[in-house]
Amino acid sequence: MNKPMKNAKPRSLFTHRSIYPCSAAELHAWHSRAGALERLLPPWDDTTVLARNDGIEPGGQVLLKMHLGPLPLHYQGRHLENIPGRMFRDIQEKGPFAHWSHSHFFEDIPGGAELRDEVAYTLPGHPLLPKRIRNLVTESLRRMFRYREAVLREDILLHKRCATRPLRILVSGASGVLGRDLLPLLTTGGHQVFTLVRRRPDPMKGEIFWDPAENILCGDDLPKLDGVIHLAGEYIGLARWREDKKRRVIDSRVNGTELLTQTLAAMHRPPEVFLSASATGYYGDCGDEEVAEAAPPGSGFISEVCSRWEQATEPARQAGIRTVLLRLGVGLTPRGGALGRILAASPFGYIRRFGTGQQYISWISSDDMISAMLHALTCPSLTGPLNIAAPEPVTNLQFMQILARVTGRPLLCPLPAKLLHIMYGQMASEILLSSCRVTTQKLTDSGFCFRHPNLEMALRAILGKKMKTPEKMQRTQRP
Image 1 (cartoon, rainbow, N blue to C red):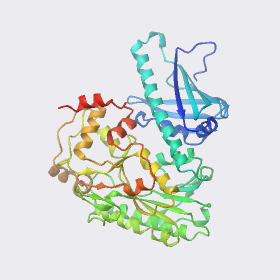
Image 2: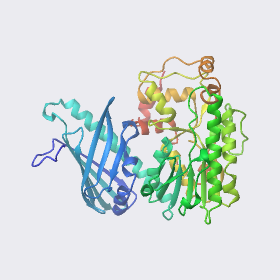
Image 3: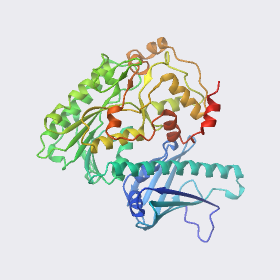
Image 4: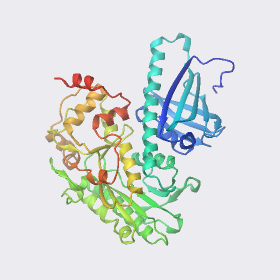
């Protein structure tokens, strides 16, 4: 175990100051809630919280799985001090550093609160390391704390806009990529979250058993709820669609949604609002036509899935529950999904385009996606279908060009449509080569504010790349 170094000065000290639109007490309270650490972990770092207990109270511990390139590392930390509204401190007990101590200081200032992060650390073999290595660590800390500052400030503003009493929220599909991002946002906002699980539940964690395949969900197991966010459904995947796969995709969505909405409708006091995931694939291939929520469904398999998925929410609507159908665009996070697959498969460069490259992608950053869900949950005017996508869709060719520019990797050969059809069949036609350009007017008219309205801004934020000045951007874009 790495004991705190007694009577030894740390070799390096990193300080980051940031200002937030709230009081010091509110800022400290945010950090004390479940999910705070998960919200602040940079998505490009591939760090996972394996275990955590007792929050930031003295004696509280956290176990992280980190990576140094391809090598997995474990970090075990312990909290030593906590003065509500003023400060807390944690140290490394086991991990990659010879010494690590992180102190957070909170102070009220005119118009808000200041957070001062102080990180004292020593690297293994610190005196022998070249200055270049120490500078890399400093730059890595700068990237991390710039990200933390941006996320924390936007989260605080979001919770102020969605200000309401603490809600009791049930979430299905909480273990998926989207669910793992959503839960920390809800809990750091002060809401109590319950989750539906298909294994033995842990009531201390708010878990409730269900089995949609066997039509099992006991209404008596459900607590009093204010809202439900339904995300569960079998992953469609990027592979050839066999008939049994198609059946499982439809059944997992239709059966699960019917079971959940019928159970909620039968409750003595049903929840006020029900959000059900769907997808912009509802519209099918629309070419370059911009489509709003009133547009009819397309004719392909994905359109059929979304249409039947949405129809299965009818019991909730008939019970008087405000029902919102979340037509989700392509969520962007390096932790998984489409962007995660592209980054993992392209260490040396990216496919220049798929097919013609002119097909539109209605994308959205993961932070904007989960923020839109909280907004829809607390915005009483929203009902029915709702497009959840960024206001500036791009073509496939534009997407790959911007990604290459942000990451500094080259564009390689294109993949012809014919080859994609040979490899993936129907899936290629409906996902890789299909074009969907949705409008987000309904979402913005309801008062939602995007963190990342354009693609380059989103990619730089989630990949830890600094935004370029207009002059630098012009130089990079010159032929």
